[in-house]
Amino acid sequence: MISSLPSEKDSMGKTLYNYQGSWYYPNTLQAILNYRKHFRARDTYIILASFPKSGTTWLKALVFAVVHRNKYAPNLVSHPLLSDNPHNLVRFLEIDLYVKNQHPGLEELPPPRLFATHMPFQTLHESLRDSPCKVVYVCRDIKDVLVSRWHFISRLVKKEELYSNYPVEEMVEKFIKGAYSFGPFQDQVLSYWKESSVNANLVLFMRYEEMIEKPEAQVMRLADFLGCSFTEEEKQSGMVEKILELCSLGNLSNLEANKTGTFTCGIAHHAFFRKGGVGDWKNHLTNEMARKLDEMVEKKLEGSGLKF
Ligand code: A3P
Image (cartoon, rainbow, N blue to C red):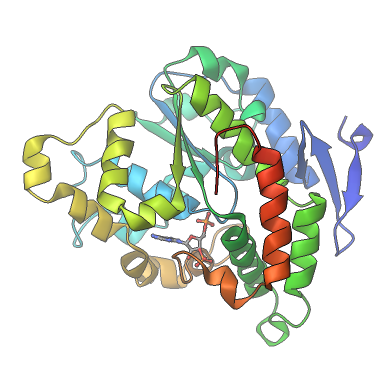
C-alpha cells in the first residue's frame, strides 16, 4: 500500500510518501496505518497535537503538570518532570507507541491518558469526533518553526559538520515545496483550526506566541478546556505560577535528566530545548525568505479567520 502512494526523495535520497495530504518517512507512515487500524477513542484520552518545533515539549510538560497536579504537586523537589523528559511522560502515537506495536495497550494506562501526535487532524481517527476525548493543538509562526527545525536537524549531524552541510536555504525551499516530514505546515495548521472552529469541545487551538506573552492566562485556558479548572484557592496559592516555573525552558533544560539522557531513537534529550521565544527567524532568514513563507501561509489560510 505504501509503495503505491505519491513519493518524493529528500535531500539525503530517502523516500517520503504522501498520505492524506501529509508527507512521511515509511516507518512513521506504517505506524500511522497501525494507529488508524487499531486505535479506538476512549474517555479521558487527551491528545496533544502539533507541527514539529511548535512547542510540543512545553505543551507536554504543561498538560502533564496540570492534569496530574493533585497526584504530583508542582514543585522543584520531587516531580516526574524533574527526573524524566516530557517526551517520555507523554508519548507520541505515530513515532513511538505504534511504531513496533499494533496494540500498545493505551487503555491499560492510568487515566487521564495523555498522548501526542504530529499527524494532521484528518488523519486522527474519525471516532474522535463522537467521543469525549480532548485534543489540544499548539501552533507557532512558520518562520520560527523552520529555524527551530533547521537547528534541530543541524544538531543531529556531527558537531564539526554543524550547519555547513545543511544550508537554511534548503530548508526554506523544502517548506515552500511542501514535501518534508509532516509537511506542509500550513495544511496541518488549517486542519486543526477548522476543527476547533466547528468543534470547540474537541479541539483547543493554542498559539506558542500567546503562551509566551500571557502564560498564566493560557494555562488557565488549558485547564478549563481539559475540565480541571484551577480553583480560587489554587490560584491564590500560586499553583499556576508553580506549574509555569516547573515547565519553564530554563528549569527543564537545566535538569540532569534533560542534559544527559538519550531517546531509544538516538536523539539526545537536550535537542528539544534551545532558545525558545519569538522571532529568532530574524537572525537566520532574509526578508525575501520571510515574505515568501508568510505569503504561502496567508494564501492557504485566506478566508479561514486565522491570521499570523
Ligand atoms: P527553538 O528552537 O526556537 O528554541 P518542539 O517541542 O515542538 O520540538 O519545539 C521545540 C521548540 O520549543 C524549541 O524552540 C525549544 O527551544 C522550545 N521549547 C522547548 N521547551 C520549551 C519550554 N519549556 N518553554 C518554551 N519553549 C520551549
